[in-house]
Length: 160
Image (cartoon, rainbow, N blue to C red; front, side, top):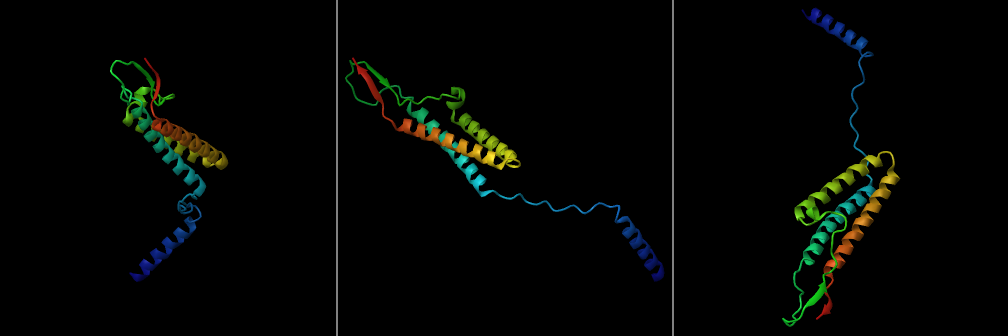
């Protein structure tokens, strides 16, 4: 019985060795991608700039919706006044006027930019870095402009 088991084992071992040339190599472990610290930093900056843009747009539009000037004037006077100059120039007010729609828009733009930057960085790292830096700069400037307009005071144009 032991001889039969040994004979079967040796024959299976021989078949296994002869078939080893036909079998493909074992799958190689998936290597984690190399993290690019500069690109990751830029994408973090882009994300934070988008959050600042959302917050500044909300703040700016909220402050420009006053219906009366924030000063005390005699009742019989007519005042022509200008708000802080906040208005959305790119997005329709259906999106910019609702904070949840604006947040969804900013989230979608951020996700799309991170995805496209990752795809571009696989073959053109420098171009991806340039795109991320330009987006970070433009979005940061927009947020800073919105914050400065939101902090401006109202300007009286004329009193009759």
